[in-house]
Image 1: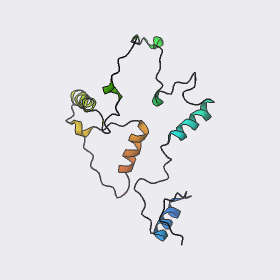
Image 2: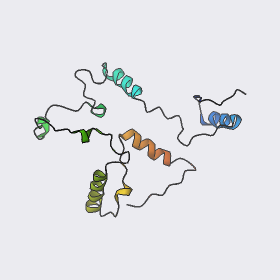
Image 3: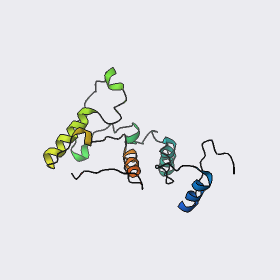
Image 4: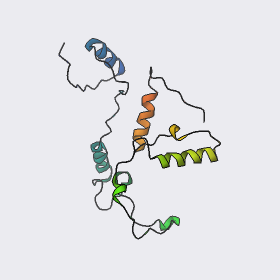
Length: 153
């Protein structure tokens, strides 16, 4: 048996192969595994290129999730006029809190408590940088042998 004291990436054709490898090699399976594809910007960039024939961010592409927002008004939908400029200060240039900005969490809490007659607090609200991170986090908690509590809202 080879020495496996270094990071190792192996693709298994089925879960039984993975389980037998873990037993034979004394490796501990991470509760986050299941052959999830990497959350890599490169995966996104090349998938975008393969789909649209151009890299994300080139002229004519507007991948909103990658920091290239729409810069023209939504006239077709009767949207509001775009402001001529937006003031950005040094205070706006920090990374957001990993658990979500407190005011955003409070606003979401107030919305659900008001319109859905809930009784939640900001501690019940989690903000993610994107949908994929949120879905991955939820799936991680739904794994076998990982215990969680979900409140009835």
